[in-house]
Image (cartoon, rainbow, N blue to C red):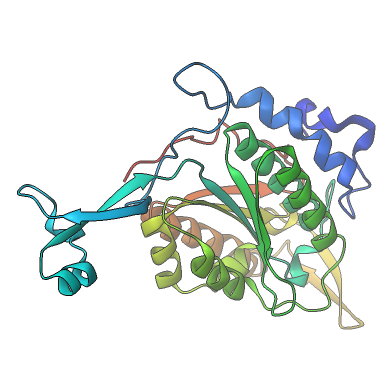
Length: 308
């Protein structure tokens, strides 16, 4: 059943077929109620050194090598130019980047209870965006597209609203041009610097199609959170005949038969369970969110720090 807290958006919530900007904006209180703002040394909310995966540091300058310096940080270019060993100095990045990666495959624009998976994706993404803003992160977003450029990073409420506007557009209907989740993750890998948080909104089948090496490479340098959008029908179909319309033809599945139910499980449930196991083995956070779940059901809350 739907949680009472999911009605926070009140009258702003749409019909479940398309996300509305007003409902995504109203979800701010869901995220802010469950996640305290990150605070600096003086107790004020705002930017702070970001938790980092890998080095997660920004190059500052090079100086001459002294005994005890880490040999891995030797600046070979300066060393070769001057003839004296130099080492690189780094400084922590002041703001972390949270990047939302949106899967816009047509299979998401479907749902049997409460709302489409696409609408739930937009709502979950909105809560993740508000949470990131609460924690002082800059925000960016992209989808798999050869034509549409990624949304550049921006901080504060302005950054969130730009992301929410993009989610509203992307999940209103299947985009005319969709290059797929793999293309989106490839773009993300090129754009990100170590230490970012990556929130992936995806259909399980599309996430399962990504090569394990792609997930491994992302998780090595970033905090990766994967939101898998499902419909209750996919996980627990009724034990009764179920009619579908497929390519203009009516198809009847007798889900009261054990063999048909087993085939259904092999098609939907088993791959989802296998995907969760594979991603968790790579230290990737995985949340399965059904269309009739509260859009903030995955918050407990999202961790604010991950240290390699």
